[in-house]
Length: 379
Ligand code: FES
Ligand SMILES: [Fe+2]
Image: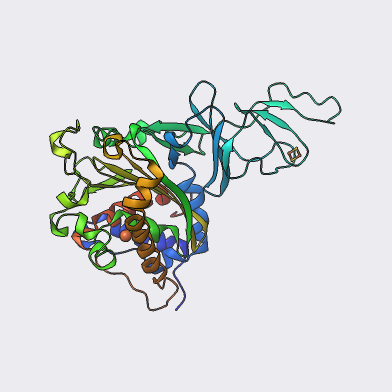
């Protein structure tokens, strides 16, 4: 049977999103494999909003940079001389060469193709052999770049609303964890063979943990039926608290200044469209899911700990001894299970959503707001 067309897929998602959670259904299988929907998502779901790109602590010194893609656009995030962070397109203004690769530190950006050179503030400083071409006032476009509790977000949309307004309520959810001071233990990228929405869904819901992570994750959290959905959850983010167990190492240490109601918190926070944060008083994982293609998703992640939890230990040694096995094991398990999804099967169906999968419905509500606003789509 042929998949429904784009309008039908969007209205099917909308029907579930508009009704109560008790009547909600999972996304239609076609939503994971429609190339028309995929194109629309890049333009109307990912591009207009905010994507988590890294932690401020990953780029401590002036000239520190990292590169990644946001909604299919190559970008650079670079620590400025004045201490702020600024993102730019990673595309030369001459003939569109990639400017910087990977991560590192630069005092200026020299294009590897014909040597056009930019300051770390993006301004064009030199364009060799260009026959008197006036470089004054030219430079890389400054992309919207904002930081919240040490988490850095970029938007490709110059008129995106400020991050604080976009994720109104999130700063108070994050308050008290000392995230800005968290010390990075490990960061990296992995690529997974599934549609980006399936990956977002996998991270924002915790129902699967009893089957997929019985040893790496489940012992660290309270009973699943006791998970609490955050009252501050808003239109653009969702969170729930899994409650850290005493043996998890995630509860606040006795001398840590963490508010009473957060001392055993373990928040799972989906920041729509494609960022995710897990945070407890002692540690945090920040992830972004970037679609490479319709069925390939690149995940960028960083794991960090509160300085009181790290103590005098060396971050790399602490990671290797205490956290690598559990964290990488969890990600391996997520990879295995998500790669098992048969999103191209014609026998795939829509299922009711468990109350414990509430974030899936919230994600649908977010998607629906974006997709139904696409001019002419539902006329
Ligand atoms: S493409 Fe960068 S200098 Fe030519
Ligand atoms: Fe998982």
